[in-house]
Length: 341
Ligand code: ATP
Ligand code: MG
Image (cartoon, rainbow, N blue to C red; front, side, top):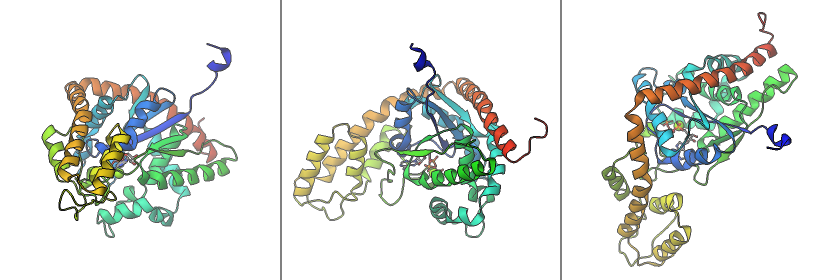
């Protein structure tokens, strides 16, 4: 290797998923596929966000603890390689919680309440006036996660854009206090499909909304979900012209089918009339079955060796702990709380 190449540092990526359930097709197209590709050229850390999962499950912690290994198995099943990507567990990295504590002094309650994703999730979860403090402040904990690994690129779905904006505000405030660029700003990386809808088309596919096609879904479950998909309610006869916009089957064909020319041809036939919903659903079902079958099988294999999953997570968390402690020390210095250093 040429000398100058040796010194080039790879850009850092941080992404993660709440341990609130198994991963689904929204994760797959929204972020997982990108992670699998990016792990070769970037220094990538993927965080199983169990603490963040607790922010709306404090009274039901089993939901989180029972899903940690599920998420790790999902990562491995889609092709995230622990040799290339650091897979770590949020609650095993104390620096993340400490950073959250420091940053929380730089963010007002009003700013958190204005965060559009927090706002819509608060209303969807019907918290009323009883929003858990941890939930309201989870954007701060996400800022801690991102900055702790000096990540500059964040592959996320659309719902996470306000978190990135809020992270960068914290970075600028902290750097101003430190009078030094101790933290780095980050930018989002949106995939082609940054918000996969649920089968009924009404909302984002989300673990907590119970509307998912999971990476582990069985052949039958996939078939049932595709058959129930929202299409064009006015497309009553095969020969009638049909609408593409808002037609979930076509949204999914765009997201998952490998042959976009063929999908465009189908769209043309559907819009002119002569192509039925049964036929488009059949094409989509075949496509999803062929993508999910190998993933489901690999997933089952990984889930059959839980000790291996724990080892992977432990090793990744130890590496992540070392890295994040360095950033924590610099942040403590910025606040002048480094008496013992
Ligand atoms: P929960 O309902 O518990 O919040 P979730 O299904 O929204 O779970 P998260 O763990 O919150 O999943 O999200 C992890 C990552 O996956 C984020 O980057 C998010 O933007 C992305 N993501 C989640 N759902 C979708 C979706 N339907 N389409 C595209 N990206 C998604
Ligand atoms: Mg979410």
